[in-house]
Picture 1: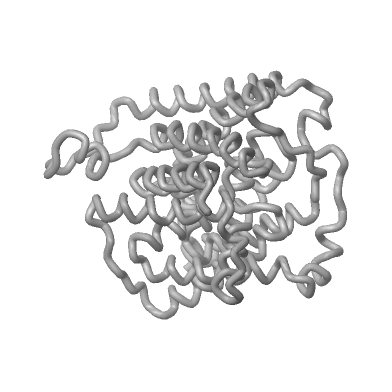
Picture 2 (picture 1 turned 45 degrees about the vertical axis):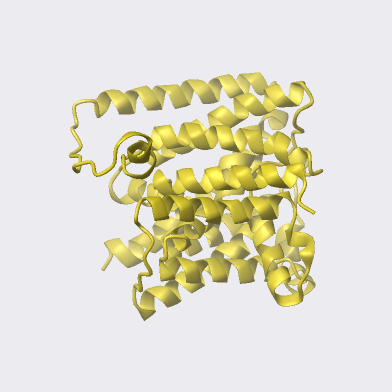
Amino acid sequence: MISLSHLSGLSLGILLGFVMQRGRFCMAGGLRDLYLLRDNRMLIAILIVISIQSVGLFIFSHFGLAKVPTDAFPWLATMVGGLIFGIGMGCAGSCSTGAYYRAAEGLIGSIVAVIGFIIASWQIRQPTLKSIFQPITTPKLDNGTITQTFNIPPYIAIFILIIITAFLVFRHLKKNASIKIPKMKAKKTGIAHLLFEARWHPFISAIIIGIIALLAWPSSLSDGRIGGLGISGPSAQFYSLVTTGDLKFFNWAGYLLIGIFAGAFIAAKGSQEVKFRNPGSSTIIKSFIGGLFMGVGSGLAGGCMLGNTLVNTAWFSWQGWIFIPFIIIGSWTVSYFTIIRP
């Protein structure tokens, strides 16, 4: 039976999928552009999401509406997992969440990447692979957060984060204020134009995603889950659902995943962007391998781009912040050998 908690997960998923598709909120593409084009818009957008979520999370925690995790820091698994995930991200051309919303558009390469991600997310959680990777996942540091390590209250870290984010936002907007972006002639009017046709600035998308990510904390807590957005775990459970009929998938996170795909499809359909597109066999193979790598990497690192980069960073976990540079190294390495060097 679907509970109110499950419905809230589904609703947040639909909103997230819709915004990410319409805002073209592709974190993998943004990090790639940072390297190839020196374009830091998506990096700033990610900081906006983290900042909004961080402020709200600690306020919610103070009033008992959310619980901040107290996990130890699996430092080696985070580094290795981040590197593997970044390589997979570079091969697939998107992160795992981006692959889901692009799959909803009909991109065959992304569909294949999602399949690879689902398979690997399940496999990495099985006893055989767990034992193989145990030397990597075992080393941990007791202080799981930056605030614990430096013995500072969270509000100090939040203040520093907001100052840095605000500075980067205002500098970017000032620098690009004179740039005029050509606009296509509108075919829709009113709400339809805003929702399905108008170009969404990545900072606007980031604000909305930040609010959605924040609301995920109390929403999932009502289902007994401590955490925010995440798709790695439910992707593994989806594999079990399909192969063995295991119904554990139908929890808060599972309905969130269903919602992300549904929301992205609604957005793509309304924007007339649903169309099966075949990128060719070589790209499909590379996308599948990329999906496998992302599944393994997220399993080792305790989260994907969504769970680590956008969520775990909000409570200043070392896992979230250390994950970022290693996915960048992995992604940029693939970009160098596949785009720059050729």
